[in-house]
Length: 330
Image (cartoon, rainbow, N blue to C red; front, top):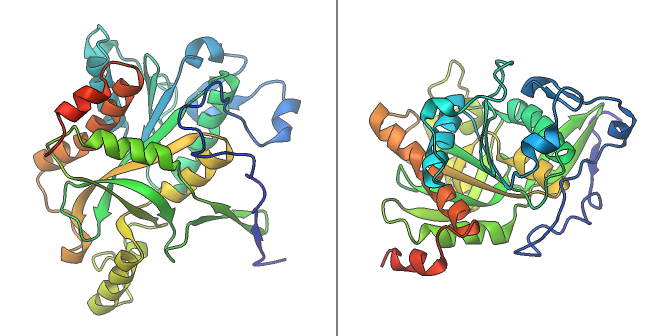
């Protein structure tokens, strides 16, 4: 049994990801029969629960969920959406729904939920389990979920925004391997292609930064796992590093981060239309360390937020296709 790989080839055939561009009344579902036997579901890391909170009343109107690594960044995104959607109130009116825990932060602005997920696959997988159950318990429908992040670029200028078409692992394969008990379960990492195309179309109306679509490689580590030479450990040469990164580039990879494969796999299995939008902080062909100033990095990190806000406002009817075309880059 040790080392066995189990391909769940048929486990998500009923999930029609990307088939209907404008679906209606598609509920968020969970694939766990044990939940039906529980009297109460405590979402421990979110400081929420089915008995302690009226989840449908609190979250039933959610249509857009945006997740990102940093609590401060997701709070800033919530403030930004507050202004973009014309919600009245001061910045201090926004309350952290997860204030009772020090693990994650969550803010709600109308139909938009902004949540931090920490750094790396283990951290985001924990919050996704509880977030997906939250959306299910709240009886949310037609939810779009987007990871907003930072990344290292491959062959693209720093500050470029990459919309992920396929999330791949360190072998450039579109899959996520999860160890469950004593088995390795391999899951598909297909993202919603219609959503990715819609985001790319929205980017035409933003003149301030380049946006492109490409593969995103997800690793389990920031240093050795991403071929960096500047960690506490390193067992390869600069030549080996560049050879690997060139193979990744030739396979279609345009940026590298640490969350996209598990994000894509879990959202797909639970019927969520998902996208990954990351800004690049450096070109890894030119070095390993991020050298841009704090001010420049802060401006870079606002770029995915601006693109997501454009999508949300378009979906809510606050801007239309004509306005996007009028602002399109020539």
